[in-house]
Amino acid sequence: MLKLSIRDQRALVGEAELTAAIRDGVPALQLAQAGEERYADSQGWLNVDEWAGEEILANIERIASHIRETCDAFVLIGVGGSNNAARAVIEALADGSGPEIVYAGNTLSANAMNRMLKKLEGKHFAIDCIAKNFETLEPGASFRVLRRELAARYSPEEAASRIICTGTYGSSLEELCKTEGYTFVPFPTNVGGRYTAMTYVGLLPMAVAGIDIRALVRGASDMETALHTGAPEDNLALRYAVLRNLYYQRGYKLELLASFEPQFRWFYKWWVQLFAESEGKDGKGLFPVTAEFSEELHAVGQYIQDGAPLMFETFLDVEARQDSLVVMPDGKADYFDYLNGKDFYDINKAAFSATVTAHSEKLPCLIFDVPALDAYNFGQLFYFFQFACYISGSLLGIDPFNQPGVEAYKGWMFKALGK
Ligand SMILES: O=P(O)(O)OC[C@H]1O[C@H](O)[C@H](O)[C@@H](O)[C@@H]1O
Image (cartoon, rainbow, N blue to C red; front, side, top):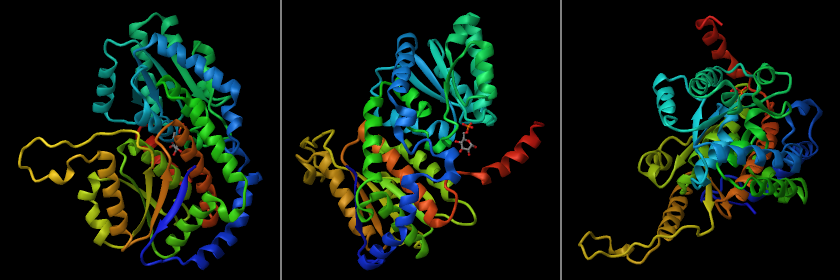
């Protein structure tokens, strides 16, 4: 199970203050546990079973295994919440046994689009257009390009059989599926994009890539149970939500999520969207940023240690020794003999401990102990951060489920494009 510890040599928030703030946060926890009427159209993720029950998982596995048998490549068309969770897990864990996963619908760059199409040359492929409202420009434009690509290569029936759409019931996307004979699976109307990891949106592409989605869902369910039971003072999501709000009140305006495992690279994107869209509103909110250590210690490390005190840091520290590579001597005088016989696992851990010691002299450091980097723990992390984000947003006094600010640029863009 995920654990949380604090390293802060200046003890910015004392034990008594934290205990009192957690006590004050109990009503927010209880509201989140019960679910709130005012957010009824956004809480389909609270009970993992609602969109990841047996029937749905079996259907996902059936569709995925057909794609795995008939395709060399699979194109995930989606942006933001319609892409980030699946990509986070696929890029971290996929073993390459399934079709190559290609991403589209997340860019308007002609260069990136052409590179994407190039990856499909000479390959049999299928596409999944994932779009909640099917008005977003990037997935809509990519879907059209890829439909034409399929039509150029296959008979109309074969092309249609290679198209899946993940859309809401009653949407124009569902209508298109009915008319054209594409496979349709539901994008939950009661789950916002960034909360859809454990629904068709996240799970279908993961299953195509060979991820153990049952383990992922089990991890999420176990986390759901843990966060919905037990004493509030032991509730990890409440503790984390309270801490980040206390730091915010003390003037820290950024939360830096960091890890020494580059496998988290795409998970960062998911996490950034979750917190940025959920909390950045009404002139408030911590700005979520990320850093991939140890590499970025040699870049932003300087700023973290000595720059303006803008941020506190949250680490994801993976406990399990899942890989091993020992540094052996080669008889050359390179002055790295102090590494002889040492495993990269231990070298990486030494760098992590040293970093926390140095950074915690200047800023508060929160450390999540992640037992292992596998599907089960990704499930735990998804549910944990979603639930914590809900509580954190409530403590901040904003609606954690809408994103009205995103519309501002869209109005101007659609005007420019003559929509
Ligand atoms: O699935 P879609 O409706 O295309 O939405 C994809 C994404 O784009 C929007 O602009 C929203 O800001 C995101 O919350 C959403 O996840």
